[in-house]
Amino acid sequence: MNILFMNSARTWGGTEKWTHMAAESLAHEHKVALVYRKNVVGDRFTTSKFQLPCLSHVDVYTLYQLTRIIRQEKIEVIIPTKRKDYLLAGIASRICGISNILRLGIVRPLKLPIIHKLMYHSLVDAVIVNAQQIKTTLLQSPFMVADKIYVIRNGLDTTQLNKKSQPIAPKIFDFQISTVGILTKRKGHDFLLRGFAQFINQEPNANAGIVIIGDGVLKNELQELVEKLHLTQHVHFTGFVENPYPLMAASDVIAMLSTNEGISNALLEGMYLENVPISTFVGGTTEFIQDGKNGFLIDYGNENKLATTLLTIYNNNILKENISLAAKSTILTQFSLTRMTQTLTQLCKTTIKNKAAQHAAYN
Image 1: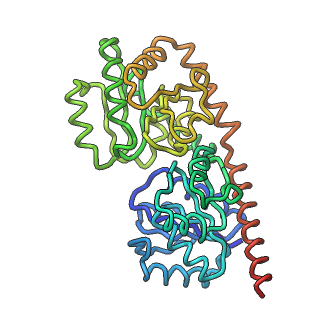
Image 2: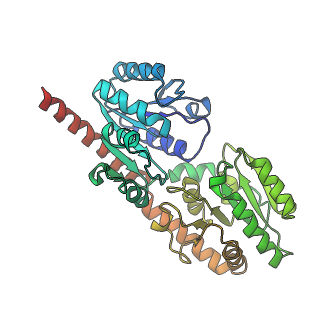
Image 3: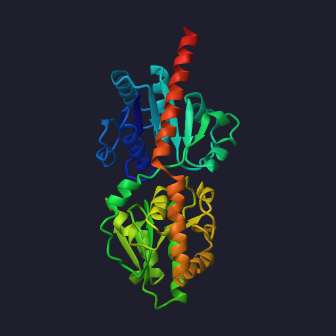
């Protein structure tokens, strides 16, 4: 198959990580290419790639170039992965007569009936989501069709994780909590800091701290909050890190306290690296984390519960070890890269076959 991924992100995040993993995995047996906007994304791919401006949902120049690439490379299926890409990819797919498989990795209610029907239904042959909750939310819109939405769990390249996490970084704190992601309001870093401050108030002598891995617009605001909460000695900001895995492997806890998420790649990676996961009840998290068995689930904003959970983990090494091992086992059994690649391959083949049948019927 000839497959074209499209990702117009300006920064590197979870969606870009999924796009890279899917493209590189499929490239072992198929011809895969990427359309991208920024080098921070494109430079990581070893597949064929094309840089386009992708300035808006209806960027005419990008649309023209996209159709040219599709015809030149004999693309059979396009997979857009960012909201800005959906309409462009949909229109280009219809102009060129190819399949369009949209990928959505976050819970997103569709509130603009005419526009969203076009983007998520009329111009789409299939929708990939990584959690049942995302599918359930999409189906609240009357124009969405269940048979068109496929739940394909994220896969983890554990071979690469094993390689990139070695050697494990020296611990910054004896009891180390990591959080990984862009520093935006949605990621809940402020909630983590406030809950952790309550934990420190109860364990003032603990050599415990948070390693915040990532960069973003809220960095200064979060640093001010750290000072206000008197946590300067307990919080370490790394900024953007090309390879965060040695730091994650050194940690005891991976905290993902977002207000909205699909399934966080960083959370899965932390679990594989034997961190105890703490997550909010968002997206698909409840589909694979059982509270108190292979992780902990907390309502967003419940600082008391977060502090209590941290105290429980801190004061019980046996519990910490048991849950971290159960977390890793969950990843090994439920988030196989091989399974994700096989399922994605079959979906691409099916949509291509269906598109060929449609063309034959019209002719």
